[in-house]
Amino acid sequence: MKFFKYLFFSALFLMSSNSCQKNNTNRWEIDVKDTAQKVDITDISKEFYDSSVPLETFIQKYPWFQGTVPNDEFALRRNDTEESKIYKEAISKIDVTKLQSNLSQLFAHIKYYFPDFVNPKVFLYSSALQGALEPVFYKPQENLLFIDVTGFMGDNNPNYKGMENYFQKSMNPQNILAKVSVVFAELFVPITGDQQKFIDQIVYEGKIMILQDTFLPSEPDFLKMNYTPAQYDWAKANEANVWNYFVENNLIFSDDTRLPERFIKPGPFSKFYTEIDNESSPQIGIFTGWQICKKFFVENPKTKLQDFLKMNAQEIFNQSNYKPKN
Image (cartoon, rainbow, N blue to C red; front, side, top):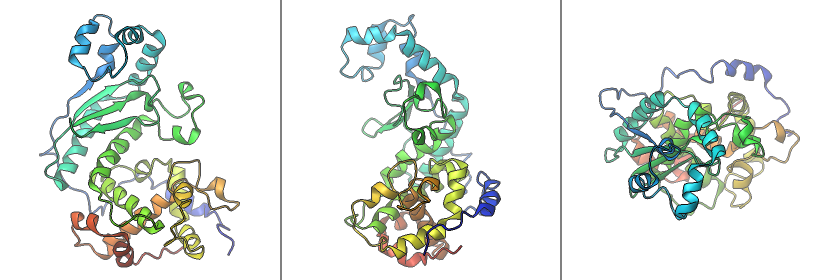
């Protein structure tokens, strides 16, 4: 069978109007407005580049921020006009008040499903683009969350010259919430089995995406995938074709170590080795695993989230009855 003979243009147009809309039958929609706690956000770099704040005072207040950088070099960085310029542009693109509210809602949703969760201390900072490709990280021991504002300056920002365009597509302020969410989602998904087979890997990723659904029930799905709306529409329109390709090429239960690179890891597109590759959405294996897990809950709506997370991929796949149709 010739894979992706049709591009489903009509489906793309139909879906594009719905990509960002809220699903009115969302099983994960819950009311947390009365339980959400205010999130305090500290902008470290605002103080770092403020010459009125003595360096000694700054170091005492944030002793972990300097790392292994010598004092002399640390002082020079404070006076680097280019670094300061990048920070000022980056922070100007972020609505901190809105981010504060969004994080409050996100953390309240996490706590609803995982009661032991404690809101982390949140810090904004500028890495002067050095950490822009991985702009969110969490230190569980100290319960500290760091968000590098230079990772969200906007697709095609001049400061991103030289960075791969496929990374830039998710380097917008609207991507912050989903990138924070996935950092915490990964903490709650246990690794079951040896993760050697493709089905194990995509269902593992699907579980993370399900937690994205629970943590961010109102967030557009394309943002959860780090997709553009067009990439999400392509994935939806070609869901059955992708699955047929996996089945016909015996990839579902394959332990081929090249599959994660082709279908899970970030890239400009997925690698089917067909003429349609350049048109395809990247990381389509994650999208497929997500749809399998969604279908599982359609078939097994009474399953508790924590029980689902403990299930192995084979169980989830078998009970999902996943067979997408064009």
